[in-house]
Amino acid sequence: LFAPPIQLFFRKDESSPDKEAKEEAGKKVSIVQLFRYATYKELILLFVGIAVSLVTGAGLPLMSILQGKVTQAFVNEQMYRTNTTPGPDFHYNDTNFDHDIMNAVYGYTGMAIGIFIAANVQVRKLQVIK
Image (cartoon, rainbow, N blue to C red; front, side, top):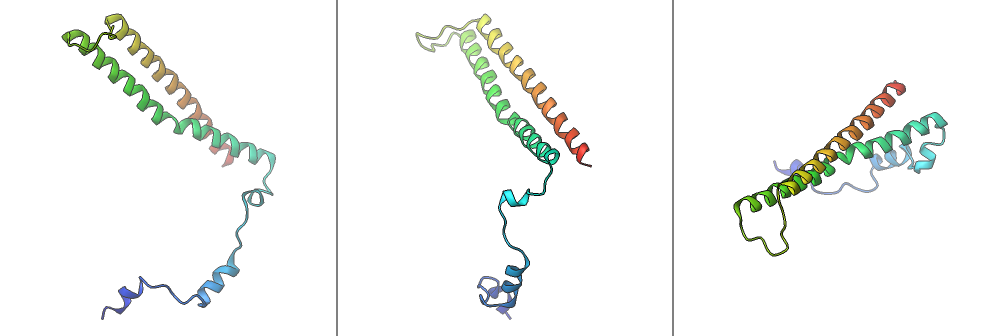
């Protein structure tokens, strides 16, 4: 009654015909052998796609860093406005707040332009492949 589910947890016999068929079906090859018949155009498309996907993928971690800077600017501004005692080295005012926020805005703008260009190149390369 319970034999089939229990047998799922045990290994099969190593000399089974399934294993021999798998070994004969395909041999593992290296990356160089995998792309040995690729043309230069295909290799260029491959490397451009990899580079662009790295730029696009770096967007989220960079957004997290910028969001942290914006949050810290708001915390510093709140400490300045409520006159809490942050320490002797804390010199923050409205000008510093504006400067920090504008730096974050410029960072967001640059990142958005970079991600847009990278994603656009990636999509155009996909259209070339089709």
